[in-house]
Amino acid sequence: MSNATDVAPAAASPFGTGGYASRPEIRWVWCLAGLLVAVGALVASVRVFVFTPATRLVDQAAFLGSTYGRDELEPYSKLVLGVVSVPFLVGATLLAVVIAVARKAFGDAVRAVVVVVGANLTTQLLKAAIERPIDDLPEATYGNSLPSGHTTVAASVAAVLLLVVGRGWRPPVALLGLLYAAATGVATLTLGWHRPSDVVAAFAVVTAWALLVLIPNRGRRVKDVTSSPLRILVAWLLAIGAIAGLATAAVTIAAALGVAAGDLSSSSAVLEPTSLRAAYLGSCAGTAGAAAALTWLQLLARR
Image (cartoon, rainbow, N blue to C red):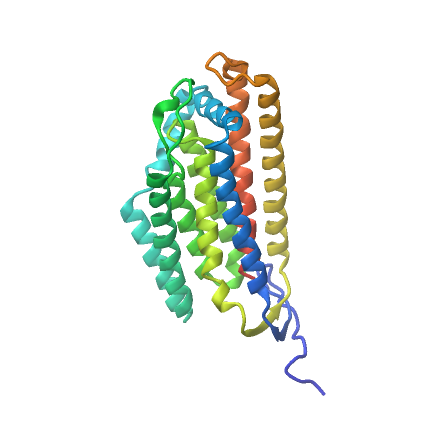
């Protein structure tokens, strides 16, 4: 004799969500853990790349290295960044609200607005509050630019769309959102608008808000859902991308610090052309890897 806890047959579609079984929801623990990781990434971006001289030098080297290949990439970067605007952000937020209301997920509609407003306001407050130390380095007096406002807009749009779409659409939305937001972040590096730490901090701010708004809703009983093949594939792609990108960045930073050998002046070997190029390429990989890791956290929280 069957009862309410029996598992139903799995869906045949690649977007299928598998079987269902009622269970107590404990995902708030995952949301809280992910929130702490995101906040930790934000704090680390500030402490390590703003207030620590050695790694601040590497961050600056990546910033200066963006001049290599800029002429070829500038048209594409401007095309990507040209999308980012206040009307775009408002329109994307309204779209997210409409999707949530159409699904009768009224709580998600409210959460989407909170994420967009909270993340973008936090970015502007942090940018005004943080004072970047001035070093004897080329263009080091540019001032604070952490977190990146353009990246925050792009990442918050990607986050709220992932928040409001149905379960079957979450894997492709997460992947496409990552590609768009990461392209925006890398474009700001290519044009010399931001340093790598600015972009990572922006992703961290958005992820923190996206997970924070989910915590109050994670204590009810819900249907347990087995993962679809597409969800598993996307989760693995995000994980592999995160590991590859962050590992590349770690190797680049270690190599740059070894080359510097404690020399934090404008004559440091890190500021030689070859080192600048390596720092820039490594930072692009690192920001993409950080974006993949934080998107992975959001996807797992929205099962």
